[in-house]
Image 1 (cartoon, each protein chain N blue to C red):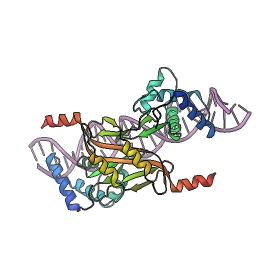
Image 2: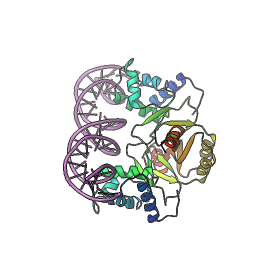
Image 3: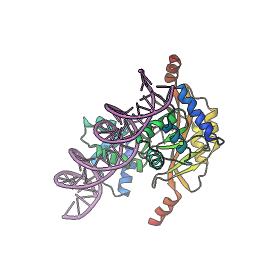
Image 4: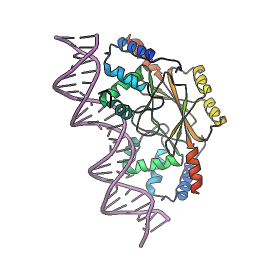
Length: 152
Length: 152
DNA sequence: TTTGTTGCAAAACGTTTGCAGCCTC
DNA sequence: GAGGCTGCAAACGTTTTGCAACAAA
């Protein structure tokens, strides 16, 4: 994941991917890519779909289909934090970070730690080509901790 | 997560939890707990349900309800590796380990690395009480890599 | 006796699929 | 023009919920 990027660079990567795989360069795909890269944090398919309806006509099916393409060319990453809703996140322009998930309220907090990434990069995993990783810390956030203490 | 444990110890933890929270000690709950602790690797709700049907009559609803209790008292851990099916795993008796998920075939391989655990233990997370963590490495497993190379 | 828990079935939910029409290539 | 891609709606599979009957406390 890199912090310096331009939307054009991202589009270029996507175009290259589409051409290589002999997929078509449809306007829907680029419209979705632009919207996806407007999100700074997490988003899900439903949210993306609703946010696009005002200015672009796309179906949920196309959203899902297109998100899958973005996953394949690693322009986004997919998370599933305990509930059934898949969360997505852009990879370019997002600093490497990990997630703390509150097991009470479900809120997600990000934190960065270069050590984990370095450790994974340095380690050789037998017979496995690592393309990315996710580190989730589950626990209780400050807010819920305070509330719990108040209750007793 | 500890490697030395007895089923009795696990039951005791569960009983203590039920009493504390003023929940009832039903035979179904203990039957499910026993079955859950017979699994060495991952299992899902459906699998657990089907495996119990032969020797104990429980509904899927109760399975889900009970798994949730086990999660609350940390006797199991829940994973969602990309697909929609939640996977569970016992915590006692399972060595600390992380997961490598193949993005092509979905197969999951475990690996252990003490460094990650230590790093997390040593780090102080601002305003967040960590109870456990999950580290997932996504990539391509040996089998899929070989097959892909064969294809070209 | 009270009320938390159960099984059952139906509902809910996010996601996937089938298909006719459309539009890249 | 061929066939990949679209929107739409229906289907899917996992999980949740409502409710009457049951049983732990």
